[in-house]
Image (tube, rainbow, N blue to C red; front, side, top):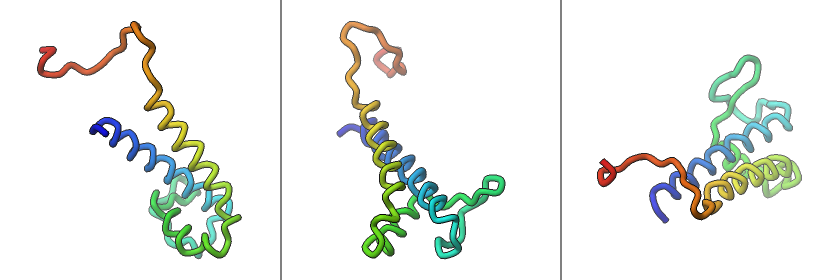
Length: 104
């Protein structure tokens, strides 16, 4: 897997984790046991993007149904972004790309 595909996969993982974290926090009413948020966007607390994985490890074994909405959000975003990144280009249709040293 090339650098481009790896960065796309990591970006999709980051965005999906961030959204799943915020969905889980929202469905739990931003309860204090979630910990201290990273920052606030207006009145909404914003948690660290990887917090969903820590919460899932700590509480997912005991209450898997609590993570259902966050899991659905993660799956839709991650697999949607990966499908968009890996979708083949139509043949014969020109597409824009950055120039490299050979093009210059």
